[in-house]
Structure formats: C-alpha cells, structure tokens
Amino acid sequence: MPGKRAAIPAAARRIISTLKAAGHEAYFVGGCVRDLYRGRLPQDYDIVTSARPEEVAALFSRTVALGISFGVMLVIEAGQKYEVATFRTEDGYVDGRRPTQVAFATAEEDVRRRDFTINGLLYDPERSIVIDYVGGCADIDRRLVRTIGAPETRFREDHLRMLRAVRFAANLAYDLDDATLVAIRKQAHEIHRISAERIREELTKMITRPGARRGIELLDEAGLLREILPEVKALQGVEQPERFHPEGDVWKHTLKALSFLPPEADPRLAWGAFLHDIGKATTRSVDDRGVHFYGHTQVGEEIARRIMARLRFSGSDMERVLELIHHHMLFMNVREMRPSRLKRFLRMPDFTLHLELHRLDCLASHGMLDNYEFCREKLAAIPAEELRPPRLITGNDLLAMGFKPGPLFREILNEVEEAQLSGTLGSPEAARRLVAERWGVEKKKEKT
Image (tube, rainbow, N blue to C red):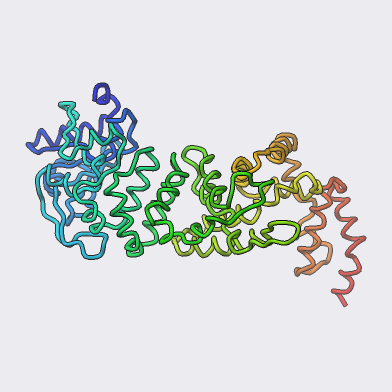
C-alpha cells in the first residue's frame, strides 16, 4: 500500500514498533487495513499481537484491561485510545453472541475466526506489507462481502454478523456473496436472540452512512426486514395518489427519501425519514374522491414509538424523531400560517432537522420545493430577536399585578406572546394594559 504509511498516526505506529522491539508479532487488523487498502483514511486503528495482556501492560505506561479473558487491552498513546488484542481462537458459542472458550493462538488462527474476508487483513507498517490468509484483498478488488469460512458457521457464532454483512455491503457499495446471502435467509429468524441495542446500532450505521437505501433493500432481500421491522415491511404495496406520489407506493417513497439523505446524516433525521410515513399502512382508505391517509401522522407516531421502545432508543432521541413525524405534514400549510404561528413553527427545537426532512419528503415524491424555499427565505429575513423576542410580560409580572398562579397564567402569557409575535404589541407597558383590560375581571373573581 504505497503512500499509506504516512497516513497512520505516529502513536499507532509506535505501539506496533514497541511490541515488535520486545520480540512480539504485531499488526494492524480489520477495518483500518481494509480502508488503507482502499485508499481511505481509517477512523480508528485496531492492533493484534502475540503478546499476552500482562506483557502489553508491562510495555506501556497507560493501559486499561477491556477484557482480560479475551486478551483485549486498551493502550493510550498521545491521548488516543487503541485496542490491542492477543491472537486468539474462540469456540463454544451457545447464545448466538459470545464464545465460552477462548485460547491464545497464532496470527493466522486469529484471522480465521473473524467475520468477513475484507475485515481479515493484517498490515505490518514497518515492512509495508499486507498479510492476507483469507482472500480479503481479492474480495475488496471485486467489491464483495464474503464470510471467512462457511457462512452458516459464522452466523451461528454471532447472529449480529447477518446484519453486519448487509451493512458492509450497503455502506461500501459492495455485493453480497451468494452463499452468504443464502445463509442469512436461512438464519434470519435467529436475529431475535441479539439484544435490541446491538440491532439498533447496526441499523443506525446502515441508514446514516452512504448506501442507506440499498441497505434497507438488502435487509428485505435477506429476510431480516420482516423479522426486525415488520411495520416497515407492511409499507410494501400501499399505493398512493399518483398526482402527489409518482414514485409509487409508500415503500418506494420511503426508500427514495433514504436515498437523498446527506452523508453522515444525523441519526434522528435518518430515523425520521425512515419512519415518517409508517402510519400509512394502517390508515389507507379509498372513497369516490380518491385515496386518503387520514390521521397517518398520529398513528405513525404511535407505531414509531413502539418500534423505538422495542429497539431501546434513548428518550431524547425518541422524542425528537416522534416530533419529526408529528410535524412533517405541516409544511404544506406554511404559506397560510398567521405571522405568529409561522414564527413559532420556524423556531421549533432542531428546526433544521424538520426542514431537511421536508426536503427529503418532497424530493422523494412530487419534487416541489416551494415551501422548503419559503421557510428558508423567512428564516433568513426574520431577525433572531424578532423570531425569539424577550417576553413582554412574565409570571412575576402577573403576580405583581395581583394574579394567582394557575391555568389563567398560561392563557395570559400565551395570548400576550401571540400578540407580540403578530406585531400588535410592542412594549411591556402595552402588554400590561392589555392584561388589565382583558383579564382584570378574572382577577377580581379570583379575589372573591
């Protein structure tokens, strides 16, 4: 790999050279070697060595034992963390996730227990050579995801590898080896043995990196979609009005929206795009005026809530995705909104995510971006202090005026803000006069 040595951080090279100087074998392994071979800059560097964990700890000043039984140490060099693992073999998989038996081994034995050939390469930076025991270089050259050894065996060891195979094929724009795909179809039902958190992480990587659309298509082709997300599978064949959706059914619309996601998309936006029309499968109706999806946003919120709870999303991420689904149809009315309503809409938390989802929704259907451009123009034209002005009156002001805390407080504050955003109130004095004139009687009632 000519020229790649310079791309490797000095601290990472220093770990390799320190281990080798002490008489041990040491190599970079896995995704970093795959990326270097492809001419890409790796995000992290994993290292394998013949040194035992205690020997690694003795060679470096800052180490953390990540998994002594698996021979994995964390070495901290120049402020960066590097996983350093002892060559090992694994056996005795009983839960479709982790081995019960681990033994230290040779470099070749270590490689042959790994998942895919493209992740089974070793690289010696001092000699600038790739060591390939499994045909990984050839598979990278022909853009193929293939298991190391029999795919049925690899997937029985760790069922999550089925999802990882699909993700690698999608994100790298590679093909899935035929035998690998057949094995996934046979064992797809076993994915339920994997924790929801691990499944969520793989799905999120799949749809936030390049190839999101193809990832979901492959997920369906491999039989995993119906196991993990039957609600999404149900969108297939749900026809929409051609006038607004020339792209086809809800499934095709969803796939098309994913295809327009920006590189390294915000996970909340990606999931919002993935689930924004999830309620259409159960709300479709037809009458003499055509096809309708009455209430699909509300129903979609509830379906999405169940999906995200099942996949153990954080409360904050779930809340934002559900808000994206809830508001995604409001953009069709932005030109008719009162000034105050429009300002409230434009200042929603993370409005950029809402606006981007609207763009994806339009591009995936009729292609008209008029309302998208309208919102952008308004955001540019309305000063920040006008969009989020300081309140003309506060709860403390209401207390000072003799009002007691209660439901009336919120009513008054909301009405005053409405008038402020509409431009009919411009000063605290005018706000107090309005409150006294409109709600003074209510204050007297409270006192009596």
